[in-house]
Amino acid sequence: MANLDDRTVRIREVGLRDGLQSIAQCMPTSAKLAWIDAEFAAGVREIEVCSFVPAKLMPQFSDAADVVRHALGIPGLTVAALVPNVRGAELALELGVPKLNYVISVSESHNRANVRRSREESLEGFRQVARLAAAAGAKAVGGMSTAFGCTIEGPIAQDEVLRMARGYLDAGAAELVLADTVGYAAPDAISRLVERVRAIAGDVPLALHLHDTRGLGLANVAAGLAAGVRDFDASLGGLGGCPHAPGASGNIVTEDAVFLLQAMGWHTAIDIPALLRVRDIVRDALPGVELLGAIAKAGLPIGHGAAPP
Image 1 (cartoon, rainbow, N blue to C red):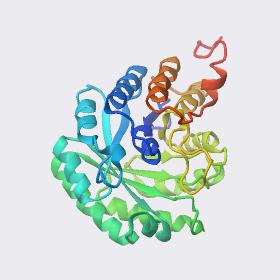
Image 2 (image 1 turned 120 degrees about the vertical axis):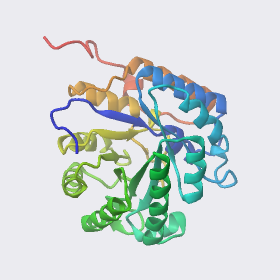
Image 3 (image 1 turned 180 degrees about the horizontal axis):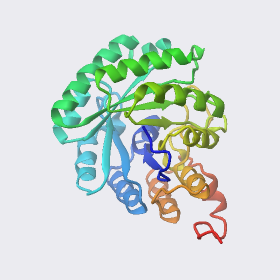
Image 4 (image 1 turned 45 degrees about the vertical axis):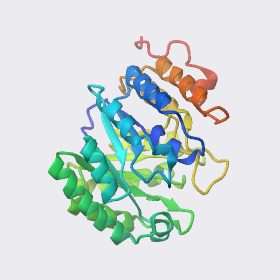
């Protein structure tokens, strides 16, 4: 459980995985490594660097092993990877990945459409992943996709989210993540669901993975903060788009989320001007891919970061 007196917030970069997986063109490995190095230099201390899926399904991650080896060579960087199944977990653990992110949709329909398994089948897969991770001294993270709504089923009952959270906890999850996958959440829903999940999670950390599909991403960050969340996923330039919502923005923008936090007096240890320069690496490697972000367009206000009078 978060220490509510602590003014430190962790922003975890997910653009290298969640962002790149929805883009048809493949980013060169050298650009990925430069992106990781530059974000670490800017102060980002956790990056989800890849997904361990078969290359024939997602060629964007055919270089996963090379990317992981490079990232693991950076002292002080927490390296995370998405593992969709037991085989993915085995590959990640063989390389020494310390944090395995696993995702199940709270929506039964969405889970079947996404991974062709029932939620219970997916949860059994997580039980196996958690056992492998524990044996290797790694962490298995339980992500709950469509926790606030689904494009197939519509609104999701909070009791269903709690049921999945309990399943994850019983299986040995080291962390839980509530994901607003398709942008259904509003601040009041964030507050209520975070409060209910934290009540059963105990000391297990709870993070938020938010999208800005309908313009409420940063408002939901503020609601999560007020409810005690201190870990947020974000994507550089909002890279990634939004599944099932063509043309809509997807993940919250890393640069804008950091600005919000710093403007509210929270500590992130991230240098925004340095973070903005990382966009050049992504833009050069992915020509034609739109990068979002208000701070990138408007710049920082005069005096941002200065001590208050």
